[in-house]
Image (cartoon, rainbow, N blue to C red; front, side):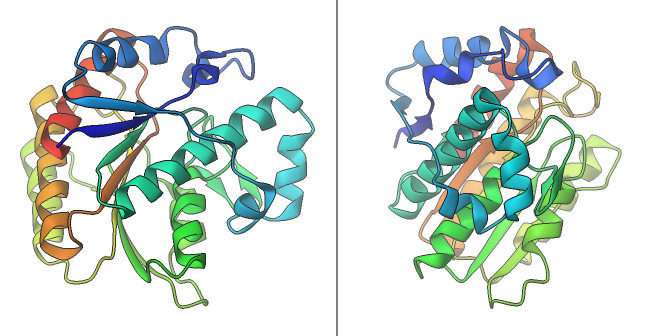
Length: 259
């Protein structure tokens, strides 16, 4: 089974911000690896998320703040749309990875930081929930930084949507993988699995912890758990990862396990 890569050439545009996530060259390395493996990857273009989609996760004030900068809003809405397409593709039975930016897991309902604007993963899952396709979800957030926006928007909801989020806390790589495995082995209810896939925890990135092979193992565990619980429904969304020289390799490794 091939993995569907959700990508739009507009994501290459670095003019929307001057932070590390927006730097030129960051996505080019990922896409070079993906395009070199046509038997493994199928690339699809997304459409921008609508304001209705965004407002399921965010207040009008947050939406209007991002709209104040036209290019920033265009890229953020397209990123959220990429996440929605990834979630829909996964729900329909094909694993997917959204190579998008800006990232989103630090975006809460009425605020954002950490290079994020809209919470892409929350918007995508709430879209599926609003369509009554899912009632539960599991998120593995393996970014170097805890996804506070994911937690703030998706945990302890009052609308009946139940989301379990794991931000592994172990500081040793063996224990880190064991922590993920333990939680996934004990997971009993998820209609879809999603990853806030930040690669800045890599040995050659900011976190200095996970190897390229470790990302393959994280992908494999997600695949195994999705096949056990929810007919294989799984998708991932790019968050952090700032060493351009290794980012493509690490994304590909995760996808090899995830496929």
